[in-house]
Length: 293
Image (cartoon, rainbow, N blue to C red; front, side, top):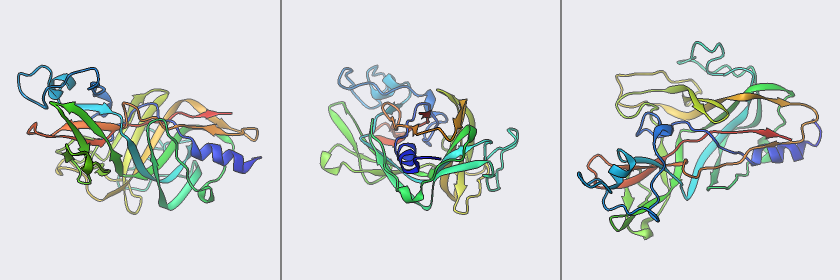
């Protein structure tokens, strides 16, 4: 393909998320959750006082909503396009317990050790061009991204009852002191909420297609569902696969591919603890849309 460096710069460095896939272990499907009420226009009087119609719990219908993080980070290992879903190439049988079949894939970014990527609402990321390459010319129904199973989230919410709750370095914990404001590492331990190991989810309908996601261990093997576990174990990476509503065609005349991150009211989950005494942040949903030019 001509103008390789220009194409790779555009292809890898601007990525847009527009649908949803559940990334929080606190709810079965984060896309079903409401957007968080805006404390600037809505008075939230308590976290979860029973009988209080303006509590965070009551206003969100259960103490869980989608918000906008100040920063959002993942480690990126692979990005590319495939003619088949590598985790379910036949469309009828997930390769749980096996390595995904990547033979139909063309990688645009591949770094075995991974590369940290951090961005904010409306921002973009820069990945090292050394590990980037042009995708092979062809027509691709699937976009694929392999990332870390841990998400780096920095976010806040409030005021709630006069307090703003800031993320700290401790996961599922917050502080009302802005001096403690820090990034928390939010692990993805199951797609099914606490109480079982749901190692993959498929066919979630999003804007411009459907999304599927699969937990992988350190060797790249897909985990299997296990209802006897309270959560999955051994996961190291997340394989996300989008079946695009319109196939993506790459040809020798393609000059670039545009993708842009958007996490507004989507990239962060805001959650109450079971006791209703704290509000903390977790990872939120994402998806992807592509445009060639």
